[in-house]
Length: 141
Image: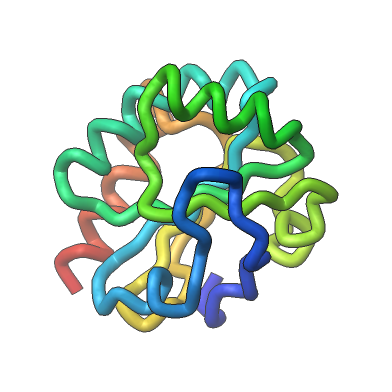
């Protein structure tokens, strides 16, 4: 937090746009969400990600320690909330970001600086009381 976002692997999940510097340098607040198709809490937060994407919030997905076919099937079946999806098969990008377990979501400011890190699913009172105020604060700056 307070530092420029670490690099994200250029490996893309098949059939989805890959993460590029341009996708991260949008000039607006962006979320980076680490997830996996085998992760139950990731599945629980998925509707919220789709809702945020529909409201215009750019979200970058980083799928890690997963099978590409499972991750692709999940997004094709349940909807894709991500502007781009990185495929971090071995979890190296997750390590660089300090991710311990999925899901984890980071709020980046318009300059790509990490403003907030949220471990756990984007659901319930913890989401409403801790994540949403940070997102609103970031968007108002």
